[in-house]
Amino acid sequence: MQIQDRVFVVTGASMGIGEATARALAAKGGKVALLARSTQALRTLSHELPDSFAVTVDMTDFAGVREAVSKVHEHYGQIDGLVNNAGRSYGSTIEKIDPAVFDEIFHLNVLAPIVAIQGVIPIMRSQGGGSIVNVNSGTAFMTIPAYGVYSSSKRALLGFSMTARAELEPDGIVVGEVYPGVTATNFGKNRMVNEAGDGPAGSYAEGDTPEFVAGLIVQAIEEGGAQYFANDYIRKLAGVL
Image (cartoon, rainbow, N blue to C red; front, side, top):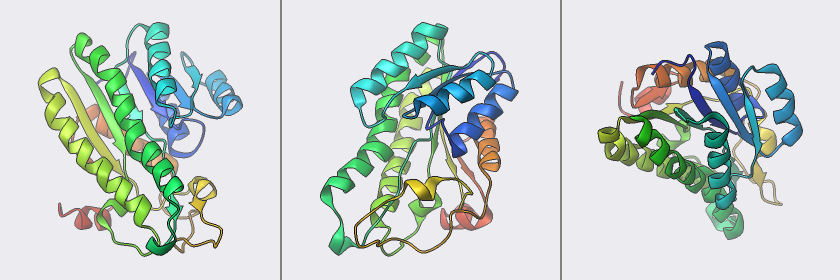
């Protein structure tokens, strides 16, 4: 898909990969709808990006997500692309998983992208096609102690993404996924850990940059492939190397 003059919805756009993706799309002439919970951060970014539109929304509020999509469509008159980037981690052993937090993680990492996709399908179908990119994780292919909730949510997203790609192909709507490696973002600061502090070791201040991952997302939109991997290690885990 050509990005120039097309309208793209980016969730989790206030920081990290989402912000970098919004900037990358705007640099190519795209019009970007910025969705996130942080109103001030969105306003600041929107002032920097021409033809952008900020919508404050909690992606776990499904009625709010549907309303946000409607606002974007009303504002631009079209929606050509959706980047499902918003997500959250959670570190806990199986023994200590908090069911309430588990439920919230799956709402954000799995159901929110599905609800957003449901919102844009009729719009894209009426326009003759569109592009949807889900930001996944290499952990979808890994077994990591104390990281089961996050990795299982990403496996679920993988399954839904593949199914959506097959179901929406006849409508000209292309669904792809991007698999970042360990990325230097504020993602670690937003991890939901239990009171015991259980969670995977490692630093989130190393590895791929948000700009690198944004480049993969742009590539996925332009080329329309099914899966894009940040490195050969993840590609090998996925069984495509």
